[in-house]
Image (cartoon, rainbow over all chains, first blue to last red; front, side):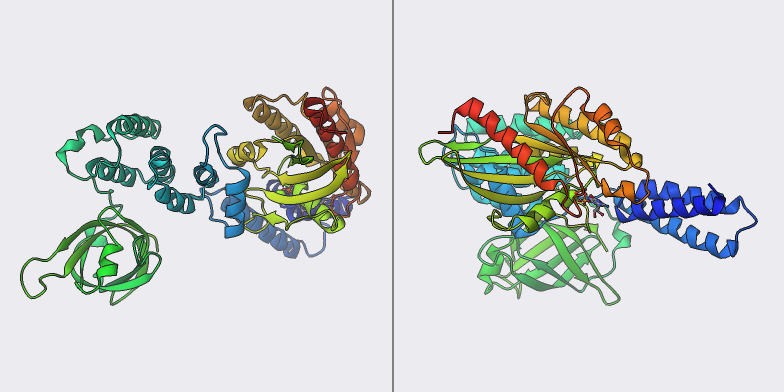
Length: 305
Length: 204
Ligand SMILES: Nc1nc2c(ncn2[C@@H]2O[C@H](COP(=O)(O)OP(=O)(O)O)[C@@H](O)[C@H]2O)c(=O)[nH]1
Ligand SMILES: [Mg+2]
């Protein structure tokens, strides 16, 4: 085959592989083309062609990098989530009436953690499903690497005695196993000390700008799903505090210590950024002009952008 | 696992399109969706949130009407082919009744075909199923590229490498134009219904 023809043939192959999404094969072929073009002097406009091929190589490499990069499982549309729930329900045929649980587990297995946790949280209300729901909630958080949050959640359940003694043992050994597998060393046996472990923050105090207000979606309660904006009354590094008026009863009931806020917008005089926070405390103010209002504290654990 | 209701004479079974990434599984389903409008009983759901790669699965429900006195419904699924989605493939395979393995005829995909077949074998084993017993057909896809002068493998070579031991029905296809797609599907359905008949004696 004459060199010109060979170059054309290889180029056509590379283009087809790229169009089929076979990026690694395409890249290899573009490189062969580049080699062939470089090896000859007789080709017209050699520099121009080499430039074009270099561009193809660059774009294809970038695409490969992008698809190889570490990625969290994306959330899918609602109809797809219902399909996952219905078609892949992890139901034990023996257990009657548990399809809600089976469906939620299916969602979790497909990495639809937020939706799964939302449904599992509802199932905590039912005596017969509580234990399995709780185990799966912990599993979901650990899968997402929110180990600290899983620990604090587990501690909260223990403190509030959500489970009767037999179940408490079962969930404890399950949780220990999960933590072992995740390779985390946590003193969850020392729970009786009553100290709640807060999730670690990824950030240094001096990295954080002065924040004037925050916006986030309420995670639960009467105003669940509603977006609110609160002014910051006090800030100490990654801890921010705001006041909620005693008149906002619904709002007060919609947020509680231990809640994880996965998407908070932070407004500072110079920039807007988003991140995650953990509700570290909520207390009624018992003296002074704001007596009866509530003070809410959030620990910023992650800045996303 | 097929749902068989002998009293109401209804069967619902599950076929999965398996194969390496980019071999044409989604394209098969898209063609079936277009060409078998009458049999399509619900919408095709493609869960591909990132451009055109299948991340979870595609789903298409079909109703075949009465076969031997039974109302037959089929759910078609595809799996994501990329190696890293092994866990999702195992999930989608759950309860499978029959499999269509879509192999890529492009020569550069030779090893990927073989790896994917091995992966299928392993995933079935984990579920207590055997690749030699489950209803299975092969499809050699993208045959059109041979005529366009692109490096493809011959049918003989693909038979030798993928089907020498399995000896299951195999079909040439061009999923893009639909050539061979119906044949593949029909044969897979036949084998699946036959195997369910052996197990459950549903036919009249
Ligand atoms: N020429 C040709 N291209 C095909 C054929 N089948 C699929 N393709 C192309 O191959 C690429 C991958 O197909 P897709 O169905 O997404 O593969 P999947 O990953 O197995 O679902 C797409 O660009 C399709 O258009 C075929 O029979 N002939
Ligand atoms: Mg696909």
